Length: 507
Image 1 (cartoon, helix red, strand yellow):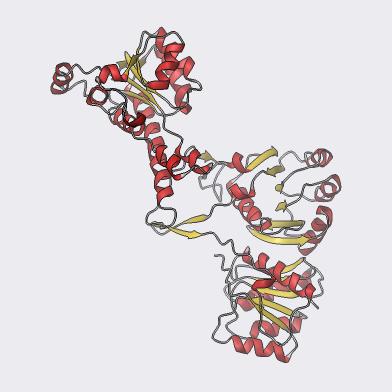
Image 2: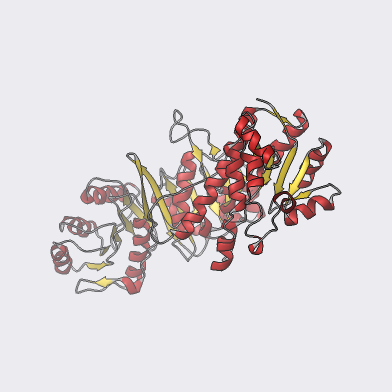
């Protein structure tokens, strides 16, 4: 059913982009009703505009908290044009017919994110605006609702192409967009009040980006989030579903290191990692751990990439590189591969959410993100022999790596270099044997290396295998009822063992 716009109620917080809309509506001889600052803005452009107060017969009260909440306003929006009873009441109470509502909401989320006071945040909970949006969207059979400046462009096109005449499907589309705005707004308010209790889950994410496909080509994939808030993409092809998973894993890993570090990831696990004085040296050491798996992987570093590092990294094929910056001559080198994705990490803090979500069965699992990082003060030496300074550095290095490796996980490290890891195994012994075999494949000497485990050892078999391979120090959470057996073995064979009390399962 087509409807011609004759009267518009306009009340917006943000005025950007409104002028062109007003000009088009004025050309179509649409009558304006407005409030406060919006009314002043409309009149400053030379257009006539009736105030809400004149329509309702009541002034704006309670410091502006109550302006539009009146039967003459909501009646004009909600009455059904094809209902004789509604039409009689509208006429009887002299309620104006309102065909278009343009309204936006107070910036609640922005006020929270910028550290507003409790009083400021509460005042940014919109009441009139959200009610207008819901009322107009509910009655989209007769009313067009525009709930955000993001919808000005399609509104303007509609006004210009159809001269103010709207169809039901168009009004229904705008109503859907309006409910997207209102649901997101309500979810943000709920999350603010529920940030400690987590009594319910309310997630509202807008403008999902359709990806080429999901995990596999036969699966559809969509990303909901603000990628550009975290990264600047300088070069390369469109980012895929699997790229995003690897990028997330890479940023989470590198964020736990303060000194110059570089990691190479494949399928969310590090296949190479090292801390060195320069990015080029860290790259060489990381690549040495597994040059086979590095092919087609993700490279991440926490320092700007210079020309020397870029020349070395450019020698092999990889899909994505992430760094806080790049020298110009480094980019000249890295740009040579057409599809290579080059990302500047603008904010590691914004890349990391405090809460993690995972779909499971017919519901959702929610947990705090694992942000625990151990240091020397967190280590409990449980053997008669304590770690040397070098061993302790390697143990802490390996413990960060094992935290970011799929369980069951074992990491072997030496001189702040990942030697090998066992990932995603069904037993800890299998994970360790996998790591030892891999180290041998790339000709690493495990004498003096350290071992990290993401969980405790239920039996002494792993420390025995590690000792026979040349490993001299072990870090693990502890907590097994048979801890003493592993500790006794270490004492008998002069191995060092430290415990952290923190398990790092990653399923």
